Amino acid sequence: MRTVGMVLSAIIGAGVGAGLTVLISRVVESSRHPVDTLATDIEAIEVDSTLSRALDLATEAAVIVGPHDEVLHTTVGARSMELVRGSRIADKALLNLVRTARREGRDIVDTMAMKRASTGADLILTVRVGPLDDHGNAIIAASNSSRHVRLAETRRDFVANVSHELKTPIGAVSILAEAIAGAADDPEAVRHFSQRLTVESSRLSALVTQIIDLSRLQADEPLLRAEPVAVADVIDEAVSRHREQAANREVTLVVRCEEDLWVLGDQSQLTEAVANLVHNAIVYSEPKARVAVSARRVRDVNTDVIAIAVADNGIGISEADQERIFERFYRVDYSRSRENGGTGLGLSLVKHTSQAHGGSVDVWSKLGQGSTFTLRLPTLDVDHHNESEQEES
Picture 1: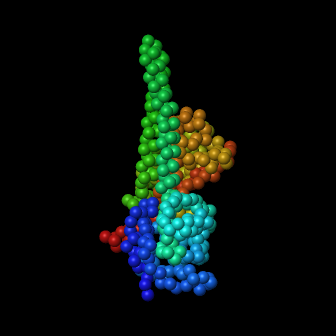
Picture 2 (picture 1 turned 180 degrees about the horizontal axis):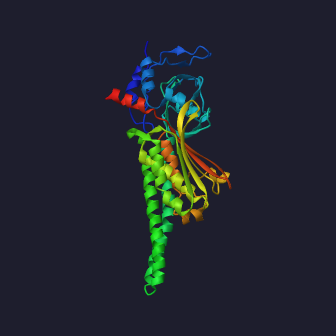
Picture 3 (picture 1 turned 180 degrees about the vertical axis):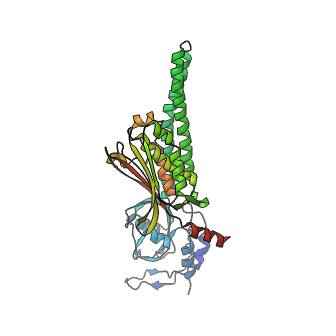
């Protein structure tokens, strides 16, 4: 019996997206096993076990389609992307590509959007479709380009936002420098403009620092060099950074942390995230208010997590603003944020830090009642972790 083993030499080639290349030769031999359920002399190939194995080991998704659009073989990647439903191609546009490639006898490369039936999530796929033989059998190779496309869009938006945000403090510094030069004979005016120049310079420095931090965080994988981190140390350091600020605003800081709480990650990044939450809570609280910082172990679905909460009884956040507060450069109260040196990047840094550590962050808030931000991180069993490291060494 002749098989389709000859196609294996063409599976490594030009590439779909960043991965699998499927450039199948048209000299594939058919085993001429008729499709029993169809009254026709058009025949489907018998998918050779070697070819199936090669496709299954490939990193991208692959589907072999018979002459009547029936699915003859799928890889795990194809099923996870939900390219097929039962024995049929799930997406109509993808099926039309198969039919066009079959009818015209040529390979087709295309980028297409598809929605997962199970979750409704949008996928952006780079697909290559081509005929396997002269009997209507075809192959689909697909790679998920969603992450790359969204990353490119994020970078474009980020550059645009940064350019816009930098213009304000840079412009202020330039104007103040001119004002100082023009007021050389007025010491009081020079003193006033110099103070303003110092404030704007500090604001610019903080903005540039947080932009760099966010860029590093988005490109970083802290869990690759993760170490056990004591949550109590994170909270102590984060609160200590802002005790003077709280005292100046007459805000009381209250700290409650359960004992023996550990997470796996980067201590400096986690400390910066909690410090940002503490800073915001102080800034958006009125004098004589209270800010509570707590950490405890809680049950989340089927696992334990560490919940670090920062609560205030300040002005609160509207429901509309709650949907956007973790966006870069978004400010609930621009004038108050500017007055206190806010950059609009603090909560975005918190979100990316939580995600990089396998956790999440959310907010509860009511206008006039205050807000509670909760950072949830996977808990670490330190004894078990140390035993595992000793075994590996």
